[in-house]
Image 1: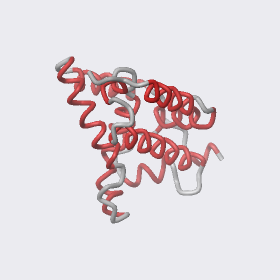
Image 2: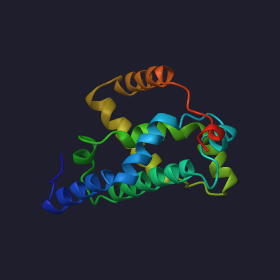
Image 3: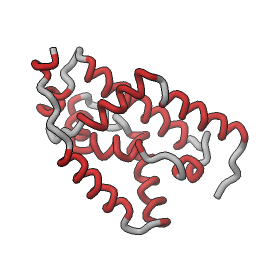
Length: 158
């Protein structure tokens, strides 16, 4: 384990405080409960352009891409960060089914690339400490998703 500095602790606390900002918290709650997409059509149905839901999606992606960049650059000791953060992994799992389409559509092969690199290392770190944990968490997430009520149709919400 690397040496964790006071500056890194303060940055970690700042990132945690940012996660508690009311609008970002609302976006994160919405994302966890509703962003279960498999296709680009699902994305358009769940969070169409110009909608509050689309803004929520972008807030969540923007926050975790920024945090991943900070950790990837070594501004926070990676193991220190991994010990108390896992939500970024769930975000990654939820976006993976449509990421290839988005990267091609935007001609941006590095879209969410910081998050991808970060989560790849998080998975390796977890497997080293607790073999099989990534698949166990995936199974629990799938069960939770199946137990959730279907999201309300956009038209009904307007």
